[in-house]
Image 1: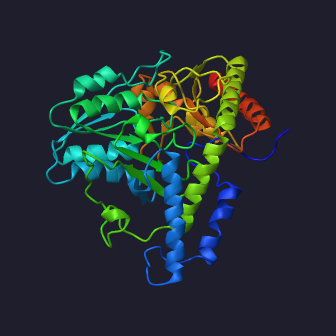
Image 2: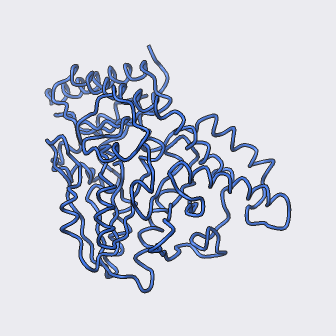
Image 3: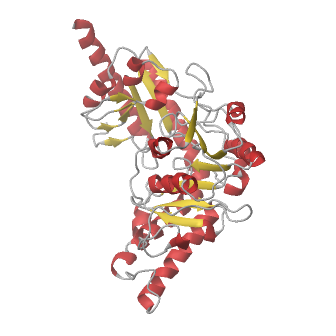
Length: 412
């Protein structure tokens, strides 16, 4: 029996892979110069490491190295993309479009812009009960576009329900109307084949700590070419990163970012089907052990199909879900009570709660779930270091806790 704590919250963050840490270590104590220092070898060596990492990360997403802007993470990248477009002088319009199920790192900057005079459209998604739950209907997007629409922001893979949006179709519609298309790909890069040219977008945000890299480093891909994507910098003070993001670069973090993404691409053909099989086993076990278990989000794909080398067909499949994602509701059980009784199983609730203002998940509510169903939900995020034994242990533990809580509830 597995007795150590079991981490199943890999959508929140991941453990740094030891191979990533090994690549980073020399840049803390041996090659420690500032990459912007141009007058000595310490700075030159640091810049060489950053340049190599930039090239590696760009190649991983089908980009040019000059298009990569390093940031502190995907939240900053999203803000730079969204606010950078909307706050630019001489922009073409004042209308922004996004989706109800976006991460708060997209919704909050857009809501702030709305309070400052921008017009905002937030599109609904397919409702619960459908195999396509969480999917954006591209025709809704087409109908929402206006002559003054400036930006559309849609995430590639959802952090709560794992749904993959048809980004290439969304980008094509935007391109027809001359609208900038931004994509938060934080949960997708390193887990799915992502090629920015194939997707046809203009801006893409991603982060290292979701792919077994360090926290505190991310990137924004900014398409070069015509028409040019122009951004208003959000951090001023030195003109680093092509003038788009000032500040001393985190050289060890950037090196680790590149190594983490390199490992993900190498292992993707084997790792993602493995995670899908474990995820499907977990769901099958929960539904066999318990009644009143409901899947939140799109249908689960079979683990038997390997990921194709070309991302275009994959990312156009409307029913595809992140291989490692599972979000379920347990009827007659409070999610917070369930979490408090999970002990050594680390998962997250479908509720985004603070002690001062408990509020059900906006993603699950966007699917049409009741507050009760939303609060009784758990998100399982599987990852590289999870084993089949851990999944069996977690399955048994969750089933035991649900049965206990239901029994206590019936006696109350």
